[in-house]
Image (cartoon, rainbow, N blue to C red; front, side):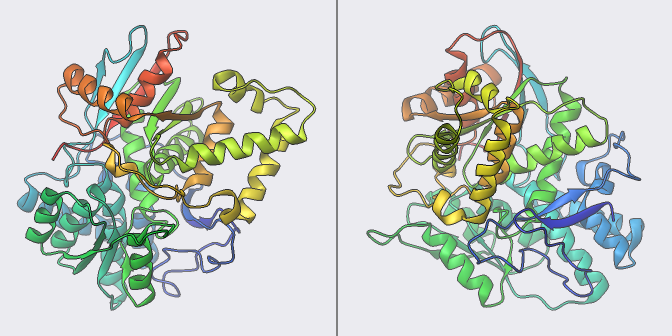
Length: 448
């Protein structure tokens, strides 16, 4: 059992596939705790992959879908046959399959050695397909081995995730319901229709808290739909395929001091963190970088959570803590303070709603794709920040727009403001003129 599915909120471990063929969500979810049924790698008996094959072949022994194929009797050959069939269908439909992210060194921040991973060329035009391809592989394995009858796929999204889901649903010959906000981009809506998705518009009612698209999505899942989702709380397997993005970055860049990641629902950051932790466990790198989680000022629930945790720690420790930045992050790692931090995070896990309420005043932003009312995978990102000496970065609209233009000029990658939000965080941080570091950012969505 190299890759288990284990809930990080209560410790529940998914039973055998013959008992629960769709282990997407912890069965204990709904009790107020933070439940994410996430992939957990046991490093015993598995080695760091060294091949140069495409990601879902190269990294298969680190993925739950491959373990599932072995458990249900398909074996390595059966997994490769399924992955190969889906890859060929993607190439026929999109002209490309999932290949390793191109990584280039770019002069984005003077004085720093910056590496840029470009996900805009992936099927669907963003990183989201990597998350969902891991889920689709699992579904195809279960269908082939167990003959399980399934309902339609369902997803809540404002753009990139919906497009990736529609592309993969078409490749897998599956029905898809997409729940989108009223302000979905017309180009996105048109492409979804062309791919055969059943698009449902979800208006936000005055005074309503929480994302109405997620509420509608959850209702569909309760009625029998499959959560083809990019939120770890709704489908933990979305974090499994997403880890291949981190594995790509690890292979293409030298050891990193710091990584800036744009955060909406949090699955991208959560997947990257898990990939780097797996690499440490397997001896591929010595340590994880400082994780810098970037949000726009319009909607920044993760930054608000971090601030609440810091305030709680300040109230409980006799030690004076710096105001912000690396000085604060390093102080939270001090042996006299770290146990208090962990105790507060444990409280966050137990009472998620109190510590991580939906953002009360959603606003428009040029970085439309990270306007999630909640950072669904927020606890994993919070732990990653405090355990590596990282911190959140909040960027205003001017900073987001400037980063979009700067990234396009320097890298020639035509990414949108959501996809360049990590660059915005880097630029905001670099204004403090810190010592030179080796840094990575990801460009995650093409401009449509």
